[in-house]
Amino acid sequence: MTKLITLSEAINKFVEDGDTVYAAGFTHMIPFAAGHEIIRQEKKNLILARATPDLIYDQMVAAGCAKKVIFSYIGNPGVGSLRFVRAEIEAGRLEWEEYSHFSMISRLQAGATGLPFMPMNPTAAKDLEKANPFYRTVIDPYTGGEVVVVPPLKPDVAIVHVQRVDAEGNAQIWGIIGEQKEAAFAAERVIVTAEEIVDEAIIRSDPNRTVIPGFIVDAVCHVPYCAHPSYTQGYYDRDNSFYLAWDEISKTPESVNAYLDEWVYGIADRMEYWEKLGAEVHERLKVASLPSATVDYGKY
Image: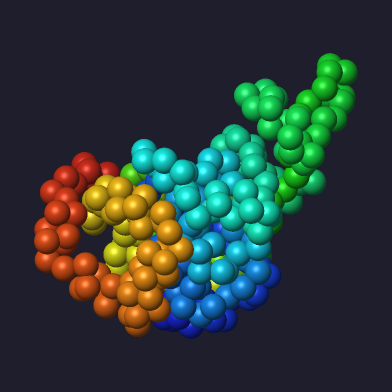
């Protein structure tokens, strides 16, 4: 059964005001196009969760989509602060919860497996344990010692970008694999965006690469270049120039609003966005081909 719909349809159908949204991807394959579509559809009062909010949550907060952020590192990677998120937190207009990376992934694991909490000694985040009341301790029934635990994170919606997927939602990822699987299994609803839609036979030919099975996926969206300015392994490189540029853009609300007007509200979809970036950017982000060795699974 095909689950193929447009990204616009998927956001309209599966993301509701007030939802907890987890846009997955650790540095790699961050679903920026989905975030832009959420902005265009003016979704409100969202709780935005991510291990690293990256620029997409700075843009979504600036657009007025969020009432809270849940994160384990907040910054413009390799550059500095997420200026807009930081300013909103400091002004008391944006609620927030902070965890370590290990804690965030542990929360997703608890959500994915249906557990009431996840033990995680040691946390390597003693200050966070003191500052965040959701860090708790329980007694280890085997040793009698204390164990730090965190509650499950169960998003209403997980959005995951992948290299390829079939029409039923069986999705394959290679390169850096972050928390995509955990986020998808923890979520109530799952939207998969992909660089390519492929035949089921291609997915079946390399089953070990299938990170997300179709039976947990609600929508499949063909969205080439979805991850820009982050990258998709084998398709296009990370646009480091844009991360530097955003540091300047995000210095004032006026320049942020001008960016959103031109690059989000002012375009219809991701293909128009990609064309607008222009030939120089396309050429700069090209990656050379480097196929992996083939694997012979044999035949029984």
